[in-house]
Length: 403
Image (cartoon, rainbow, N blue to C red):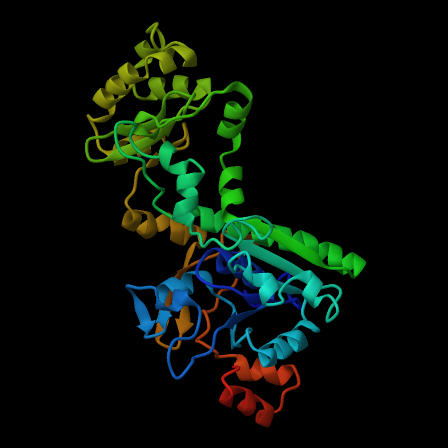
């Protein structure tokens, strides 16, 4: 892996980030080879300090080092710096003269207040790309509002689309709005970075949780906006139009079958030994199956419940789109993840064999390298030294509580 040339090698990105969405996006940049310097608040009076994610339980490597924090901060460096003080701003400006990007995921009104916009930084580096991720954006009446993933799932309609039709609205089990918004941030940043390398001129790049959440409503959004067709929750998490594309009950668990194309329906009924279903007028075409979905569900449950999940996977995997409905432990213990290299262990000062997930990208057929997220302020002295501060100056900044 050490021989793999990483495409962002040589690029430096400074990020005033916290919690999940922004750090998730910049972790991709770090794994792709960028030097990502994570700015974190220093301790005050021996208390607090650092990204709030460091304190998110329930599992810790040490008091200020959570496994939650490791999830979003692999491959980064940590610099403690108080951006609210003039001395902190001076350090930032010096760092940015030799950097390519300034990223933040602060509340929408804070980047301007802390001088993290292109207008505030272009005199220090005209090519700097300033990327902003906030809850609701920086240019509207909600810019001062705090916001989190779950709120976006509620407002953007996700909760109303998730769960059983007879039950209460549900959020997704993971913070997918955070993750997609971080990915969008990284995409916009990289596009602007390419342009800045050609033109020598940077810019501001913005995204926000609510915009990203709404954008992911995708084709149901167009169905509603153009045809007034509002997608609703379906039994068994079924697809709104393709049938059967849903969960079915096996003898010892659940399967998700997806006959998105007519050929998969034909293949499935043949392999399970029930070709007569293709002649049943209720199930001949997709429109017929959709009109009689409840009846088809009862028929499929009756068939699939006669054998365990493993039987149906052996019979149908690779022939039709099918997957087991795993618990999280089953999903992560799946030997297939080892086969494709999606699980690995790395070294951490407090755990020699810290288990982490690999990045889903491959370069030249290889997974991207990982190293543990940094301890708070672990790289402060080296970063400041590289920026031209001598030992006495660094000691002075630390004594003053700037770093």
